[in-house]
Image 1: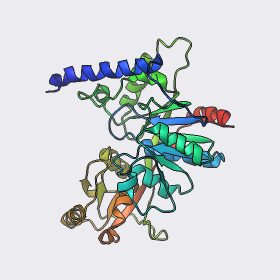
Image 2 (image 1 turned 30 degrees about the vertical axis):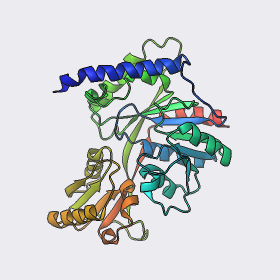
Image 3 (image 1 turned 90 degrees about the vertical axis):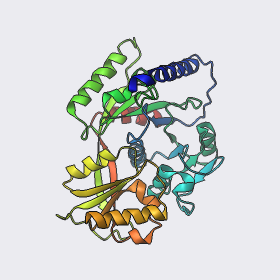
Length: 347
């Protein structure tokens, strides 16, 4: 069946290459602002763990006393125009702002976050209305209308290599050779993927960069993706106690298998994983189905992600069984080279 999709994949790849060629040769216009911008993106459709990477960069900026802002398209948000996500007043919820911007605003209420499908307008608004030293652009690697100082591309080491074939045969928006535009490539979830996959990916990257001449190769940074802590958001004093009784996992994320593997590595057994599509909406009927599944599998506790919790907090029936797994990344020592460049340029 896959071979029938190859004509579409070839067409998609040709169009993508022509578009990038036009931007490279300045045949298509791109706009810039004065504030340095770091784009955090990927080359595959679906979740690679960009949001935890962005959170880690925000944390680094805060430690370095660098005033940082974020721009995003706010995927699936029903806002219009240019919108600031107000961390002090989030009554409109994730259905308005989008899941990831809403979650980041809850975690970092003092970090200005601006939304617009046209990232140029979001960046211009943020620069005009806020005093920031640095802007992180979410999912902007393909959004070349906006010039940026740095591109960071996240590759998921749980992805099989065949997923890097072009859409719709694989999941690749662009080929690995497009990473020549990036300054930093993060190999994420190295603790969840196989060693063979990691070695093969590094080999492929080095092959794709072999003809760059005097142009430096992107810096490769490895990162582990794991559990930071488990909490009751409304009751921070309540401590999660690991039990021999299985829990039920609940997620609507890009890669639910990564959630399962993280919990297994933490020694948390689960009797069922209630999986919804990425960015799924949680209706009252969905919540009823979740509770019914909990009863059916005999789990006393439901463990979900922070991204899902921001949409579930409105349902009081889930307050008792629901716990939230706060997930994050841990960069390897190779990240210091990346941070040294940012530190030098942002001072």
